Image (cartoon, rainbow, N blue to C red; front, side, top):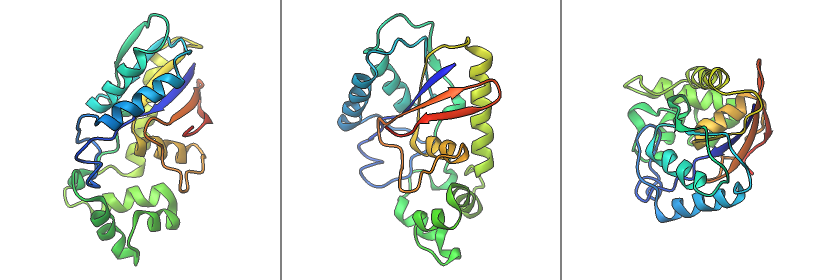
Length: 212
């Protein structure tokens, strides 16, 4: 199964423009977000996808449909997979990202998410947020990875061998996934509309390219 994995081209007018954390909280694509989705669609226009999926968040569904409308052939399926929604930031959803990461990093003698990444990578950052969350709703690194694994197994069970699958997801989830699968994501956050290609094997998943 070949799986071109598309970073969701989100640029919501309010949340992104005002440096707000956006995980499970949702908002519409801005004009820039729509443009980024169209640019991703142009890059993928010659690929005949067998199926197209996105997370069940509206911004990903919109991006998926923009891309699908530019690709050739008829799809066997066009739907949503909750397993590939963005990371849940719990209590911190919708709050100022810079301020929140400053508070999360403070017990480590640091002040930013980048500082935490230098200490222990994506695992350290995710677990530090989990530990700091008063609601205990934020996802730990292991929780994100387990959800991701369940999503890939769902694809294995559902799709046929050697199909091309379009899957639209979100930046932090994709970066966490890449980190887990051995890709160096240092200073390399998935671009809005960025394209990563994976191959889903029976017993593993491998990145063929990341954030192109």
